[in-house]
Length: 211
Ligand code: SAH
Ligand code: MG
Image (cartoon, rainbow, N blue to C red):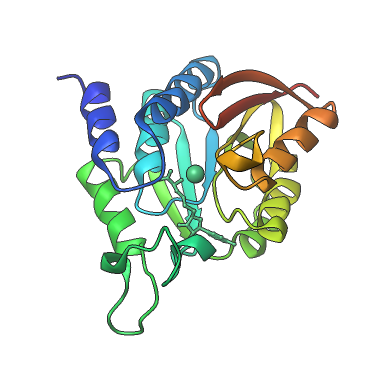
């Protein structure tokens, strides 16, 4: 088994909300982009237990890029007790809060990606206001509530270099398939004239910054 196929198989097996075909698309697009611009800085917003971190991390490793994975690790609204995406095994028995950080760390260690994938633990908008490094790839998959997702788009997408990739997850044009906020920010990215579409697999959208 090659290193890449080992990592993709591992990613497929991790708990999360990323179907394998969308995970592969995340990897494929990141890999292509990394080949064109190696040694770059990439950012994932919303890491949960590390599934998408491994798909992206596998591509980052191939291009000697560094992938930051940002999450406060206390889960989104839909991960809390009483919500459909709640997993009781992720609750910290000390304080009763959801805590995915140990799970994310174990995933990255199992993948042997610790030199390529670096965790940033905190609230996305707070980190964004102090993060000055330009990005060559941004993956937005954090909170899907209106204010949180719009802030992620407004505060982070402007850091992408011209030629860089913007990937957005859970984009559903039909309201019966899922929440509309990721779709709204995807539309806004296109309407700005700053980003154009390059790929679409399931609910994943891949855009490139053209100016
Ligand atoms: N990309 C992951 C799934 C992410 S789920 C995968 O495909 O495997 C969304 C994550 O966003 C949750 O782990 C949650 O803790 C995080 N999140 C939600 N709102 C956030 C915020 N405001 N700041 C930081 N992280 C946030
Ligand atoms: Mg998602």
